[in-house]
Amino acid sequence: MSTDQINWEHDARGLTFAIVVARFNGDITEKLLDGAKRALERAGAESYEVFHVPGAFELPLAAKLLAHTHAFHGIIALGAVIRGGTPHFDYVAGEAARGLQQVALETGLPVAFGVLTTDNVEQAEARTDKGFDAAMTAIEMARVARVIALSGAKAARS
Image (cartoon, rainbow, N blue to C red):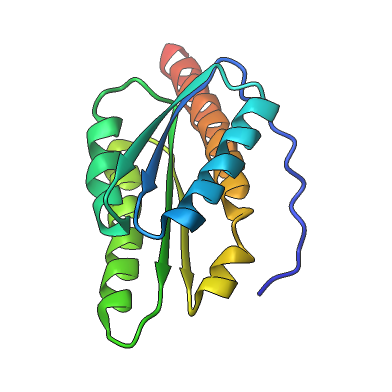
C-alpha cells in the first residue's frame, strides 16, 4: 500500500456530482459516502445527489444511466468488495472496475472509482477514507474535462 499523501486542494464551485453507492457491505459504504460528502462540501460543490444500488456489480449500469442524463459534471462510484472463500470476489471486483472505466471512456464523463477491494473487513474499515479521495478525484477530473472542453472550443474558433 502506498504511503504517499495527496494534497487535495480543489475548488468544486459550480460543479454538480452524482454519488452512486452500493448497499452491500453497507457499514463500509456508508462511511465511504460520508467521506465523499465531506469532500464535496469542503470543496464547495454546487450540489450532489446520492443514488443507492444493491451492490458493486450494479454500479456501472447506474453510472451509465446517470451519465446519460447530462445533469452532472462527474460521478463518484462507491462500494466495498471483500474477498470470501470463492472466486465471486474476482468477478464482482473486476467487472465493477471494468464497467466503470467503460462508462467514463464511452461518455467522456469523469467516473471516480471508490470501490474498495480488500481481503477482509478490517482492511476495508482501514480504507474508508477512500470515499473522500474518490470525491476529490472526481472534482479534479471534472475540472480537467472543463479545461479541455474550453481549449477545444477556442481551437475550433481559431
